[in-house]
Amino acid sequence: MSLVLTAFLAISVAFFMDRMCEGRGLLPPGFLEPWRRILAWTLVAMVLWGGVFASLASIGQEVPELDLSQLTTLRLFLLHFLLVMTIVSWFLLGFAGLRPAPPPPPLEELPDQEPVPAPAPVPLFRQFMAQFGFVAPDVPREIGVGVLVGIGSWVAVLAVAILLGLIIMALGGEEALPKQPPALIPWMVALPVGVRILISLSAGVVEEVFFRGFLQPRIGIFLSTLFFIIPHFSYGQPFMLVGIGTLSLIFAFLVRWRQNIWPAITAHFLFDAVQLLFIIPFALKYMEKAGTGN
Figure 1: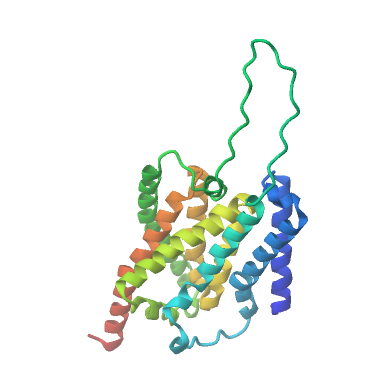
Figure 2: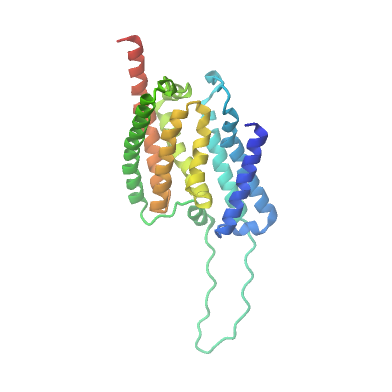
């Protein structure tokens, strides 16, 4: 798929999101001004193009080997930075700097009637928290739910991966099974522990806010899950997409169940942290020993 087609796809999705928001009554009040609405969805289309759909251009082609010598730790956070900037910009265009509503016309005063005060404006911070799923009656409890789901996610992903692997082997498709992880994975595992924790935290917060807090309420679970999976095509290992899709569905239904994103953030962070700090290092050492015969 060419870059032109992926750009068209990103623009189409942004337009679709706009229509869905309007149909569900979720358009911010600032979007009554056309320039705000056009600019906001243009930013969404741009980040979808570069951060989500660009990887579709490599389908059917040999994935080029990643030059790890040119990769820096800061570049790992570039996409997350762009996602954050898009979310914040979309929100500010929709809610910040609006003209106050004109006061209602005066009513005829009755002798024993108390004047009704005008409602106080909601601070921007609270509106931001409400827009992206941070409002919860008991945040520590939601985090505790996320810890339990994060542990259970590993069981679910391993079960799905093992079952799929057995099915592929039974069908004689052993060659489709990955023999080694993408080059980026060992590179990340070799990073300092603090950096790996920061990567896990960034993924848990930013990706959940964007895909589950922003996209899911506006376009639904199916499309938000699909858009979460698509960037991982760049790894060049279709088998990995099954586990990633399983995770995304777990997080998506967790958000629908709890009606906030704290459990999904916690579960996502915990899953990635366990993966980068324990599971993958152990697996790489095992593969190295098995390769040397020791």
